[in-house]
Image (cartoon, rainbow, N blue to C red; front, side, top):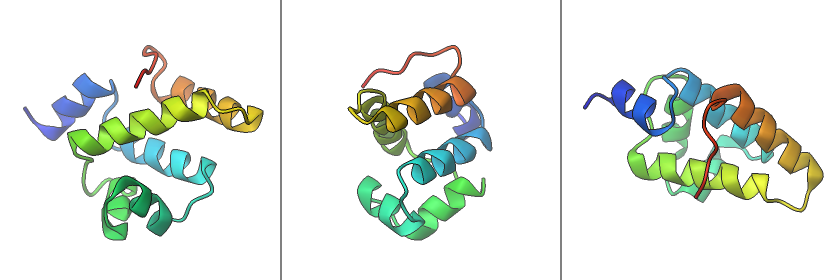
Length: 99
């Protein structure tokens, strides 16, 4: 299965939308690429390549990103919940995420 096919099957979106989703999620969390990379257990250049469409996240990384979106959706912080819903609506309109 190609990387594009995997992303379509797993999240229902294609690259570069995956990169845009990652950038928007990182910015919502107010994290630098370095800090977001540390949170996901990858390197800074990896986050940079994902956001710029030069590489695609692994299945494990996609699961972690999905988990972060779900955690934001459950956050007691209303602003984070709102941002999470906006991101999900923009990139995953036909899919309700679950961890």
